[in-house]
Amino acid sequence: MVKVKKYSGLEIAIISAEEERQKRAFPEKKKKEKKKYYTYRKRERYPRDESAYNGGQENEFPIFLEYLIHAIDYVLDQYLPPNTELNDYLRFRDGLVCLHLQRYFGKSLRRSMGIIHYIVKRDFPDVKVPCFKTLNNYQNDSIFSSYFDKVIEITSQPLKDIETRFTTDGTGESTSCRTPWYSIKTKQEIKKKDHMIATVTSTVLLNSVIAVEVSDHEDPKTALTHIELASNNFAINHWSGDSFYLMRALCNKISEKGGQAHFRIKGNTITNAKGSQEWKRMTTLMKQKDEKEIDELNLRQNAESTNSAKKRKFGGYTRSKNEQSQINDIKNGWSCYNFSVLSRGFYEYDIKPAFLQYQPTRNFNPSTSYT
Image (cartoon, rainbow, N blue to C red; front, side, top):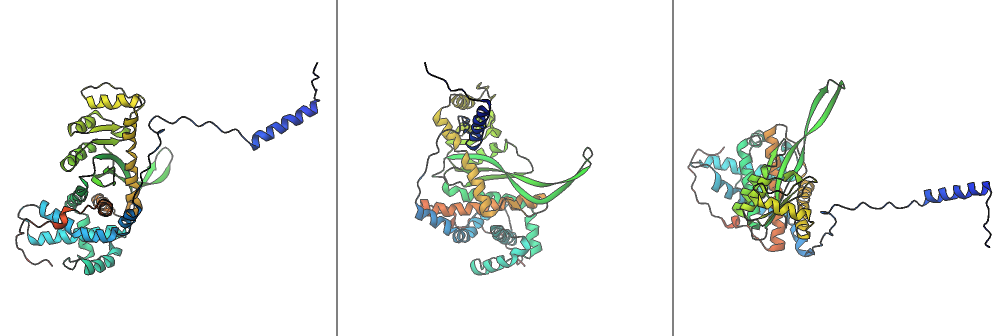
């Protein structure tokens, strides 16, 4: 018979205290919660040519200076109203060049005047720098907003042969405006920082931006316009987004343009078609945890990479005060970002934009000299 050692009350208390100390010193690791089905797959690593990648990064500014004037000339030649006088053409050309230079360096318009004069004198001798007040009026002009849209569009077109996947996401652009607000309940003045929302559609391979809509709120229906615009210049195979864009109308539009929709579903999402077979296909595969569908959805993360890259290079803010000026400034920032993508396209894929060799197709009506 094995004798069992009996412990006194004091010994039991000491042993218990030691066990508690050991638990505190070496706590048990908590089991990690199982990730959702659309995040557990391992992200694939894409090897890259470091020499070509470095070339694209190091020569962003020379490419920007080389491409800028050609892109603006192409846009104005194609999209200025009929019977535009030469004087008006020169104003738009000078204004767009100078505003792009101001936004590229991220300084206020007044502080940028010296930089603009220096670069224009060296690289754009046929451009005349307007005075500060005139440039400020240009930035407050709604007409310039449409030309920033066109510059964004034509700087994404050179990638049409390699880009077939797209993603839409919204990102906040902070402003320097603060709205005082008085709450009757708390009797406290609260100052909140205002933001503008940029709804951005970008490509997946090189993260080029093809369309930007700036507003004080985010609307998922904006993606419908972006899909229509993308279909004019690209072949759409796949289009992804987060649950904010989970709409049958978007699924139908993407399917109509020959692509497949990939939007993150919610817990209560149903698979009933209700007139959208693309919705049924997408939601059914997502609920079945189809690996290919999950991989396509995860490419939506490239939208976050696009937003991050633009904000690191050109800032995620605008110094402008009024709404129209903020819209123009934000679009201008995305336009500058697209030129940096073209630098990568040249060094990594040997892509040169067609607008570099473009010859004007119209003669502007003569007018008084531009002073």
